Image: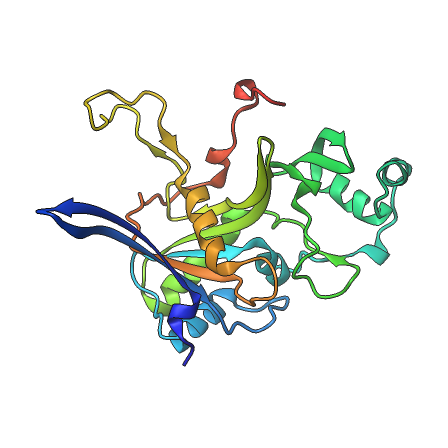
Length: 275
């Protein structure tokens, strides 16, 4: 059996009671290892359930399953062979200008609905889903074959819902599902994982109207909990050769929502101060 503690992170909230440290809330993040190389048509939910059970982390009610977008795209057959792409003249010109692969640029353009920025060899686009990110979220990492890439799932919310329903059918457990992707940030170095698809969980927790420690009314607090959970899961999922493309988050009391969508996390254009 896999040593669970080698693949588990703990986020613990504590307080001092009667001079002693007391644990108020513990969030456990369990990396699901042992999954095979995911192929087109695989039952991803079944594989996740089996791998979790094998390592002693049987899925429970209230768990949050975080899955990387690449394995979802692989299951759904959303993998592109760059050698079969015929780039447009626009893609060729852009590729020459930024020293990029013309076929890759063409795929990025096809996955976008607008170009937001082009500078320093970086192409920032708005995807068909409405996400603003580098290269339309098209990923070359963790995709088998040097000339193959994985775009984002066509409908990440629907993909998350399918995984959720299949887990419920196979285990009888009510869980939430988040599909994650790695995004950079315009004002800070480094990348973090964000939620691009959700099911069963409200992605935002509106705390406006609540009071802080000193009784002041919160007026702008609206926490992107789905993004926070996706980024927390990345602590055990990783980005390289760990072979852990999914994780269970356990112990977080989230707000359930049957008709949740990650699009709620997209800032409306009229509120955008940077683009």
